[in-house]
Image 1 (tube, one colour):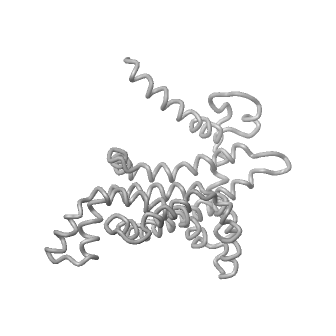
Image 2 (cartoon, rainbow, N blue to C red):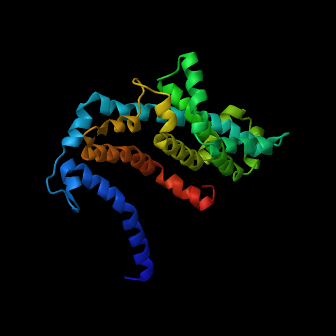
Image 3 (cartoon, rainbow, N blue to C red):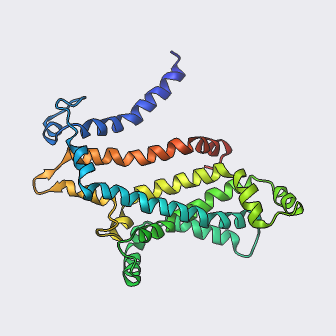
Length: 265
């Protein structure tokens, strides 16, 4: 085997090792995990997974997270598409400053906005709802979506727009029937990143929810008690949080690869 083939294999093994370790721990008891090092479960058990799939407080954590993440992804992409088109096709006073301001929202830490969002949503009755978290995550996902989509749209010649108008297409018809299919790779990449950033965000999701829309990341804190951590249960919950992201990656993998090839990601 050539050396250049060994390096990627070693790299992949290095990346997959923590995931394997997490999955292996999920099939162990807490006592076995604390007892010492073991590459494979000595006492194989699925008790942690049974608890997650039968306890409403656990499986609703996953449902809540998927609901607000999906809602945020739809809102972010739908809002970012016309904004990115405007930045890509038109020049107006302050366009570069406005584009930079959008990116600064992505740079700001979530802790800066947690308390203002909490007071605002409590006042208007949105606290502890999926919409509250979805809208809060738009703060950093919409700028990211605009930035990615603007790059993809910039690679589409303006002559395409002009030709469509000459052929009698209205703007909505042109945008949906011609332009969107042209940048579908960009839409797929954007949806992926919006989904992932919203899925892993914890501070805002935990601050803006209590019971009805409590995310799985907040539910996982239940594993801590005065007796210690339920490590097997925590590992099982962590393993299941990887699954939605893996599914999304599977469906948009070709778009992500194309985005990297075009230099837009």
